[in-house]
Length: 299
Image 1 (cartoon, helix red, strand yellow):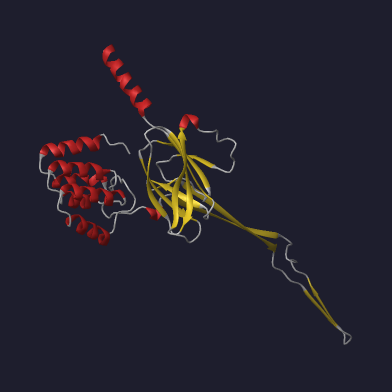
Image 2 (tube, helix red, strand yellow):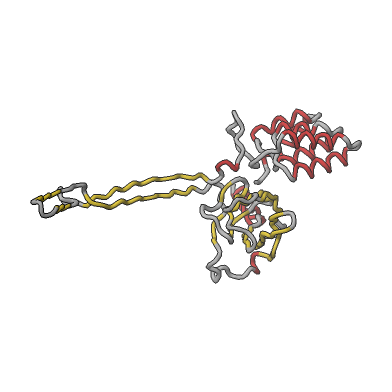
């Protein structure tokens, strides 16, 4: 019993120590304020020009940045280094539009203190959408309607006397409270009809672009080239499970199919349907290996 407990303790300790931690800063000097989404989840409620996300632990970050003015959003996959790090990203205005670039990167234990920078919005990494509640109160003031008119006509002149508020003299006010709840990811996450499972990415590739991707892969003669191009396409897009299955089906050898199926899992929207990809594998051993890979996958 003691031996089992010791082994479990060592396993848990090793996992904790081996897990990388990332603090990420996003800032701009060349664009309007922005709202940051990570893996489809809005991280803060108020647009900003400088935000620090603390406690991110995943190897890949799917980022979306939306701007407060009518400008195109930026979507990009960011890959974390092999050690815990402080990484700073800058929004640059290039000839091809706004781009997110790495500005600096240091090991987390060598990073300067953040307390002396009040301009930075600091938030912990969130896996749940930010909820913002706004209460608006409108107050109107005035007097109670009322009027007294006195007329004196003696062929000499006309006297008119008006007395507003003569009824009771009360001042009235009207207060209206409105509460608006905004859920973070909102329309920035695709909604698949009839699917209520977990999602791995926020907006799958459209049919036209996917058809073009299939055409490109089919044009190659060898598995190595097909897998290489397929990975490039997958890495730059969010996929449906059905689409991944169709891509895997284009590969001839089962070992290459399995390699592609594993790679695509982290870029798939309806991961709850990923069992469909197994239909493209030839051997039960490959199906089992894919299932083992999925069960240990860490987002």
